[in-house]
Image (cartoon, rainbow, N blue to C red; front, side, top):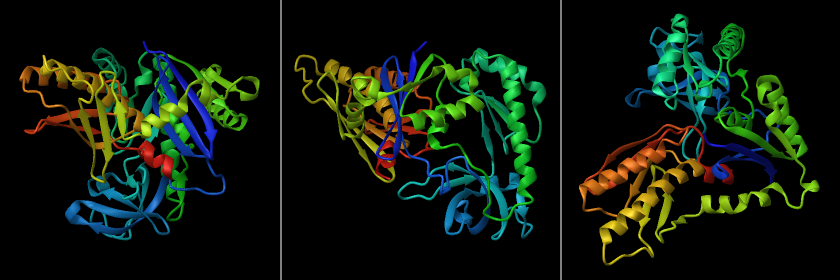
Length: 400
């Protein structure tokens, strides 16, 4: 079991979260400090939106959740929507008002994405609408998945679905049932108040993004949440006291005045961040990665660099590629890269060597809590990978 630790600090009006596994930083999250005077569209917020436009040829609609704030909506979700004002008989019509939730943040080139399939997330379980199956996290062992499905089979219904999260792996069923009861009450309340609210009303305001990041951390092996700054500590403590009291003992206030160095110096976070923003990433073998972003995809080029062996180039190239595969998986998670990723490994003339490389890459990607998959290897030996897109990549979060 991996040892996990979280570092939290505030710098330049941004809140930083560094997730560590076995004393190595594996994820970096950067969010603007919450502003109580404004309510920007945040991931997880639930609104009553109005259909502004329907673009049938791409199977989408654009829904306003506030004056001038348009969001992308997949038309296939319309049959399961909760409408507060229905204009026509078609599944979705311009002017319809319905309950939607933000599922993807806006990027530089894209508006936020909303869904009428609502999700209510707890520590152990997620309640979902639109999909009524009983599902489990892909990270759970097969035997555990089957056990949970059997345990919860009597809760199957036509109104909502249940997804067991990875954190439920070793918990008691009573904890899951209690949390599910709370989430169900929250869902019922949303349905009740929606019918009495006006268009553009915010029915549910999510926790600040840094709290959501904490909710999504694997708690297995989590020993400490070290927080620098009294205000940030109070905000975090307030959430844990209400929603995760069992983890309150993990919160540690780091007062830099009482130590020789600030938290960033103790854990060298600035150097890790600099590396996570660099285009070039060096490998121990002497090779290196070049990571470049485009609007459509991310391109990662693997280079042999100083790692050259004239006696056995194939063995040398495979060695660099195998190290690169491990580093690519690490960088995808560290930089929160998503969507389509194209990796140009050093060409291998051996089919067996290529299989060895792809197997190693898939194995390293299993450590990523966000769903990531190797799609294909093209005729030009380019490896296609996809990673689920939810939040903005690190370089965009920093530059907002």
